[in-house]
Length: 284
Image (cartoon, rainbow, N blue to C red; front, side, top):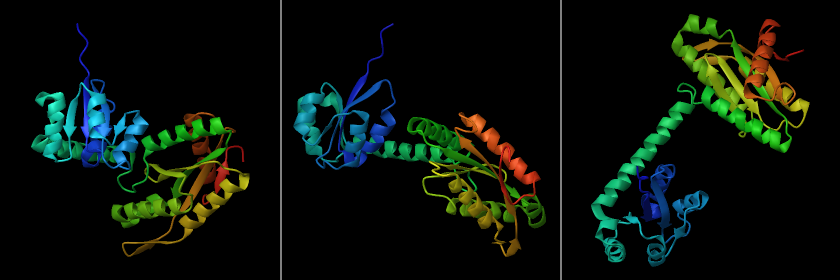
């Protein structure tokens, strides 16, 4: 059986939809984007093309000459460009006018839909925080980076104390509002470079990257405890909860994501059964 033919594509008009085409086609084994053209050397799609190893051009004639044979998409809306490319590549190898605008619109919407699906798949729908899937992805990235740079980072595993009582007393609307506000307070207690995730229920995790001193992680844990301990005013109801935190360090307590989470989770239970509203390490 003959191998399927790879379609070579030249994208003309990076600013009109080249970014969408590059990002949607870059992983397709049967499509190869051989070039992208824009008169603006700062067009975003040209930067994407550079990262992907795709040739970028600001001169149309040079692009057509060096990219053929190929199928050209004219996304500029300029019919004179379509006429020029047709004279060089043939009428069967140029898509412009209404067809190109239709494809551009379709690809842009597909790209937006893909981004929305990815967002939903990796973020908690209630709090907007990274979910368990994205947390583990970020954790594995942190392990790789820390191993390479010989750094230390910390995992904090958090469980809200008294959340069930608030949820049962005031209802799910207040309980959901409490989780959202708790998420906001935890996020405000760490650096922008750190990751806060919701693991499910009233459990959260934090990845504290590049912990330079022992005091760093203690200070962050104490800051979160203080933030959560302040009363919550939610839907006209005032309520209070606290938080129990377990901490694990890489590489001291584990060198895999599963080990670190297991140790931090165990430490959290030590904190919960040791009085709550505090943080613990396994072995404390």
